[in-house]
Structure formats: C-alpha cells, structure tokens
Image (cartoon, rainbow, N blue to C red; front, top):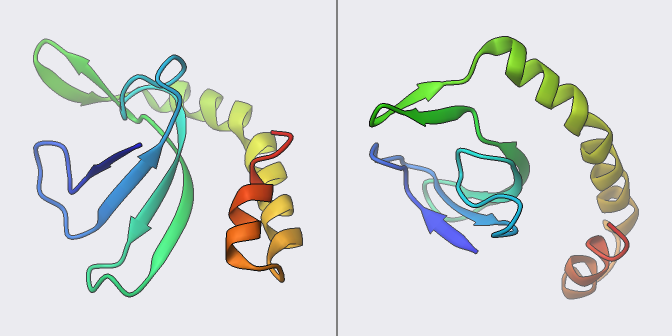
Length: 105
C-alpha cells in the first residue's frame, strides 16, 4: 500500500494505491486499485488505475496514445468484472464487502 498527494506535483486529491510489488512496482507501471479522497476528506472513490507516464531521461513523459488504448482494451474486462462484483456486494456490511470483493480475482 502506498499513499501520496502527487509525485513531484502537489495535488489536492490524496490517494492510496493498493498494488502487487512484483506486478506493479511503481505508479507509472501496471494496473492497481486506487482510493481517491476528496479534498475535504469526506468522501472516497475507489478506482482501477494504470500508469500513464514513463520515466525517460530523468523526466516523466506521457505514454503514446496507441499504447494506452491497447492497455485499456486489455484491462476493460477485468474492470467490468470488478464492478459487477462490487455492485453485487453493495448491500452487505462494509467490512464484509471489502473482504469478499477480492476473493476469487
């Protein structure tokens, strides 16, 4: 788990990233779950995110649009599966939801 308020650029939205060190060693690489917190700290928004920049020659540079499109096409089925499971669990106790949401993925 990792929390930040912007890498190199301060952001009003604080976030926490839940990830696998072996599959997603940094926020610029791979897919991961992110909890985005509202500026006032009253709300949290779970999101499926991917690295959209690359570290090249000591600078963060945007990935090519075609490469991002290919990654989005690859990740869309997983995102839909996670969303369906979250909707099925929406009426359960929050602690039970969090535990059950990740079983079997």
